[in-house]
Length: 319
Image 1 (cartoon, helix red, strand yellow):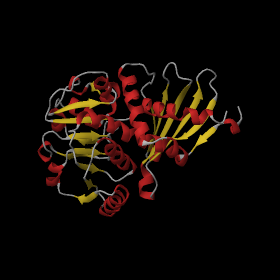
Image 2 (cartoon, helix red, strand yellow):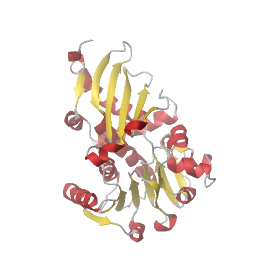
Image 3 (tube, one colour):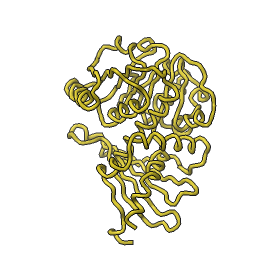
Image 4 (cartoon, helix red, strand yellow):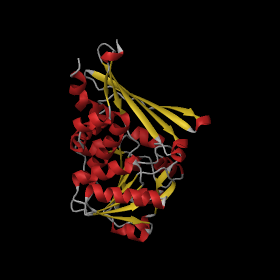
């Protein structure tokens, strides 16, 4: 194998080849594969780099019948934020399934954001009110941006409320959202206004609940994509208790999702209460009634796999 034979796709090339609409369709296939146990995706390896305040996550995935498999590597370096650098860096290696030859190296950061936003779009399409028009977003980073992109794919949003910790960053993010999406966008700090939201997306690194059940209205749908470690929490256990909780992967959520792990440990909810997968709904299971709905996602590399499946013709094009 020569380095010249390895196809490299950067963000700009992937953006041209893969839209949010494409990713939305791909995520429906991904979640079906997860819940039908058709994908081979071991629980990710977490390599702690404690002296660097960092973690490295390694995730291999293969779906039988496809001509490739992937290994995704994600670096989370918490010191980066203070240095004005992204918290997350990611790369996806694509290997030929029958030879093991490395065929491509892809920008994993863009694919991660796109597939995460598309995953929330799939959940929102199933669980949110069809006439939802007001979106509240907690967080001002790249993932928050992709959440907005995903929601706009499936709902006619008219107003967006942005909640963030840093006033300057929150204002700048809101202005960027307003300019790009041409929608009424406001910076909020008062949780009293959260009752206006039909859909809430949380994309933070919070270690305490962002709101209580009394802060939100009956029928609201929540996409919770932060709290991907047991010591992180975005959604209060009391909110989960009153909600239909839908997860991307039952095994991963019960092990890694801090919101769920804590609520189960303190007895606020049971494991079965948090065991319904999004793929189960896509495979025909009915949606039970509840005060709220929560899609809790810690991310699954099967989602990346199905995005790569759409990029495979572009990878093949150089060979």
